[in-house]
Length: 403
Image 1 (cartoon, rainbow, N blue to C red):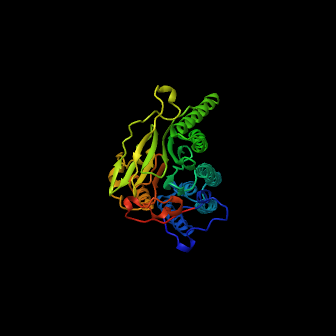
Image 2 (image 1 turned 120 degrees about the vertical axis):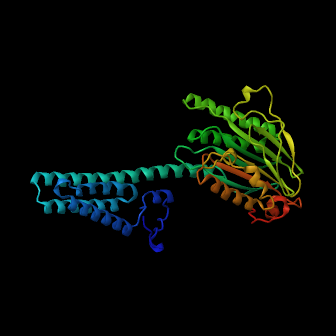
């Protein structure tokens, strides 16, 4: 509807202002473009009104302009359109010399309709700001609880991608954590059933239990049992408050610096091993029920060992990746695309995945996306001292983020 000059396209936000709240109150059309369209439409209506005569007055139709402006414009712009329309109607009716009370009624109706357009614009912007504030608060809370990536320990260099869906009613509960413990590095990635704030609450309960148990428990299965107990306790509390009980699919990994990784799978997606130019699905033989559902199974959770050769990287992820769809409903071909990026470093793989998901889904996300690429230096040194040297299949470098 008109382009602004780059210098006037958007004012910089005030310090401390939320970008979402600022964008909610901004105009979607520039002042000059708005003025041009309003004048052109007014001229068209006035000319048609003159051609039809008094039998079919068309100037009153301009009252729709403030209503249209309220959808795209700021309150100030909408008020300017309302004043313009009122002046046009008053001038045309006075010039027409019609019956006095008809003129008065038409002017009053125009003024009322224009005022309602301004009120509607103010209400729209206020609602948009409230939604943006709520969305920003939820996402900020999630990002504060989930530690920034990358995370480095003595055994692992964890790069990752995390994109919350950022909708006020569809914020998911994807979780991840990397903890250095006396027993090696423990990693968890999980997905809470459902969406919304209750799902985030269940995810936070699982995270808190994992952070404590990962340091305390020598066995990875005991860590999984501790997280199970936390999810069960959260469900009991949720039931008492009338909320829905939830389960958490999760994959727990234990790294001790050797050529194998210990895994406890609680109903989660299998990881991918990136090594020697290939991306292979890691088959898990001891998959148990999701966290929070242990009472439904008679089998105890069991750990198994996965191969983790030097120079390899292990990718773990949530179903926000594998269940992404395009406009026709086709699922994202994750393994096919991943095989094309194996020779790149962890950061490059994640960048390519993020961009490709965006293109494939057309920018429409139906769930959170959480991905971790776990690697270690090829020479066997601690990741905390040389995290930047590991690359997928050892053929690429990435920017180090050691701490």
